[in-house]
Length: 631
Image (cartoon, rainbow, N blue to C red):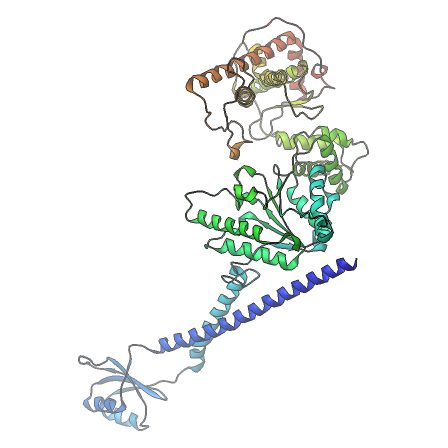
């Protein structure tokens, strides 16, 4: 305890010293700014006082008066300004001379010269010459300190200062108890916490903590939350910054901010530096860099140098997070820099249950809610998705005026997230509603008839989202990490169920409603052939059907395959064969259950939404044996 208190006192003293240094820098900057501003105001006043008026000796002025060459004069307290009638070459049109003779006015009157008296306005000259410029420079000084300089005044008036947000021990308030569903990642980071708590004991056998730990995983899996939990467990300062905040308009600013960030962390050691979205800063360098790209490379080079330069025994740990590890520069990932990569993947059912238990602490939950059932309804959800689900369920319960959140609210929230918002204002024609009902019932009956498909949870013809006129939801019974060829073929058959129902009921007069189904089915069939080697006629190999990482979740956005034209033609034929077989299987199932298809569609038209309880045909049971039909 004494050692921990000593460390905290040391960090407090270091922060106080840093604050004193910043205040001294600000005072120096202010003094120099005031001196320069005063000098500029004095120079501007001197320039403004000079004009096209030429100062002449008083004797010449008397001679011009005697010659009658003066058109008019203005007599002031200390000088006389005048205008010549017709100046000769080299003579000024306007002149000024110092007033020395108090009886001048009488002499001028005898020469028929117009004399005008004027009194200088001292307050106006002071306002225009000094006060307004000083006000302008004051606002300029405030702008540079606040807008340009940020919180510091180092570097290019603060451009080179790091914009990292510092969270001290009492501000983090996140521990490993607040992180669920990523037990393996938490175990990996426990060693980082142990090192920060006691660096000397950790290295008693010669081991050292990794210089950098990279958290890798899909968006929303809790990478940033894990990093803050490490800081909360270790009770050390936590410097958090995004990779994009290093990049600025001016060349060299990013490198200066990297240096300043590591310098602040050394002064506050033991501490954690967390760089979120590392791919914005550490993208792989190009051989043809120029302009802004060159600035990013300088910033990356400075980051590499800082990682190599700091001593791991001082207690500074570098954490970073990215969901694009494929674009990171290889120099960042080598041993000695980011020594350890921790995968923060989407949770399984057990992990989802743990995450749900964390988030339902903040809501009033009904006693009849089975959280394990909710976890089973959310396959593929990340931590952020589950947090959003719990919030949407609470909003749903509030909307209907309930006292607690029930399972019905969770199901409604899942439908809202997966399928979109209900569009009851979208009124369909009776013919369209009837076609949509048969289409969705076709999906549902094929899914209920095939042995390897997920059970049907709900069928609806209520329009949702941007273009969905109806939907069929299936409830997975368990998490799946491998899929067999039979399971993939049955998924294709379920996707083709809507088109098959329209073909049977409307005598082959199909509609555009199967567009989304065909896109998903084509993507699955193409993966089966080009990635999984499930086409014996083509061979047990892949064809590098690389998916563009920017669009890997959009579906269908693929780069050109590394295959000859003949092979690509064979792939197209194989895809066509798979989809035709899937359609034939779906039509075979629906032909054997035609009466249930008609009855289910009519019931769906009446109720708009059906579940296995209202429609027994949706319950899981084997398909009857019927003859094969041709699509």
